[in-house]
Length: 511
Image 1 (spheres, one colour):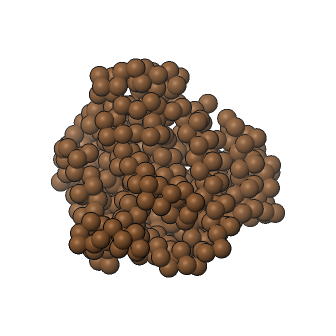
Image 2: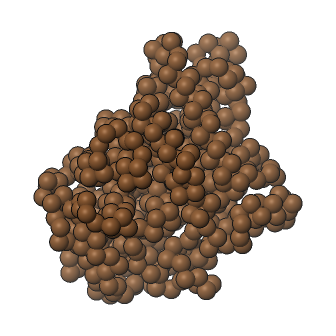
């Protein structure tokens, strides 16, 4: 693990450095003031383009420190995809992480806000760059609020802004996404804009029809997330998103290929983590053909091909852990996936179960399509056989010989094959378990599903601390420095949270 200090001051330098090194065509545009006149900056969108690149760096973090602190330490570990295998006995899985771990994700909000503000100053609000910036901000702030709950929507570098309730953040993001998709849909100059902004677009290379689908897909993701607390709004939003067009095929997946993947750096190069026992046990029990696409075999041969490590295991030696357990099957240039057609199919399946109009298909249709899309996305064979399996369940977990976590009985007996006659809770467990497997390696969304639904069923933490009985945290505590530097706003944030500033207080959408 590579820790770093003064992150706020170094953020822009690190971000611009990584983007200029990862995308050779951007060497000049990432230095918007270097040997270019103001007229040239404006004419070719160099200035606004550089800020949009910065926004993508927060919305889809890949720079190694950004990825580690925003994604790995939080979603990947708490979503039970990977587990921390350093000897440090303090992390979020154990409910006792240092304040630095709690503060780091929020520290990326000020750069996002300042970049967004610069886009508005440079180009105003009635153009494609503003619509694009709204989408990127929504992607980033959805993650921020789902980590902490209440969060400042206009955070400045001193972290002294007023917090907004999670409900109000969601409502604002919905409004922003609606504004963005409306503009893109009605923009008669779209083809011209696509050419102008293509050099700055790390995801879709200037194809704003695909950005429109991505924004609608975010709406469907949001609708499913709030369905228990805002059922009427959720239904309306979901049906609108599907009607206007979400991501349907893998060719439109939100994926970015960098020269050095953040997941590769943290899991493979640094060796901070290994595959979590939870996902390995489900996929082992299901004889899931995607295992070889997701995991590598451990260096030390064990009792089975792939071996995960229990979340919260008392790691005695990182060197030993790296040999005993499987890691993520990822290369330096493996594309990072942030939103997929498979996820959208599973969202539609849940929508049908809730009585929503998702386009005419049945829950079974969309469930099986979600699995099939995932198999195709990963290049895995055997989906037809997998879909018909009505006997396989999660496997009991056996630790590696000389391992650190101990054995565990299976947490679930849910099977794979869809059953229209099953009770609703069984349908939901089956659906979300398969959705969770397909979401890999998007740990933030995996953690969201566990918190929102209680599925998939997961193992207990062998050495949970501080009296917590939760299987995974409901949230991450605020930066403790807020109690000193921003006391009145911090107190208001806790009031908006509706409970103590700890790991147990649930998200608004969990209630």
